[in-house]
Length: 165
Image 1 (cartoon, rainbow, N blue to C red):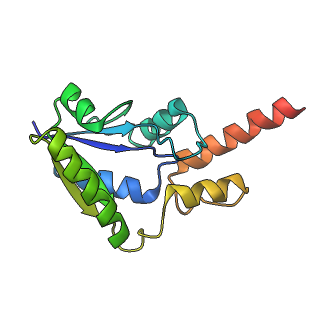
Image 2 (cartoon, one colour):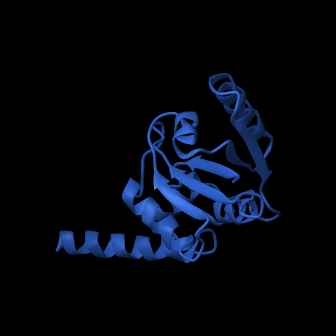
């Protein structure tokens, strides 16, 4: 069985992430969408919210499993029996960054291979960082993220509104 891990903060998951996952589902028997912590980023959604959103997006796809993880990606790969790390790339800058991570992961575990998928046309401008800024400033990101993200934003706003009453 070909198992891949697609690690990221997914805060929030975007249409570009969904595209990478759906295309990778044609290549792998199982994909763990591994929601990790990026200590350099301020979170918008909690870990649990992110996992729940991703679960909702792929609720009809048994081969795609959103999970929370901490620590090194290669350790998580070993834990779930994955031999592949899936990474998406939007541009040349992403390539240089991702190449360095992939090379270091190979040093940590030579049995785990990193697979890069390039963003589909029309999606390379989408980043979670930009989406967070749009959401924080009450902008409309509905064309850039799955509907489940916008539903979660609405729930978050409703709860925050009640807390302020």
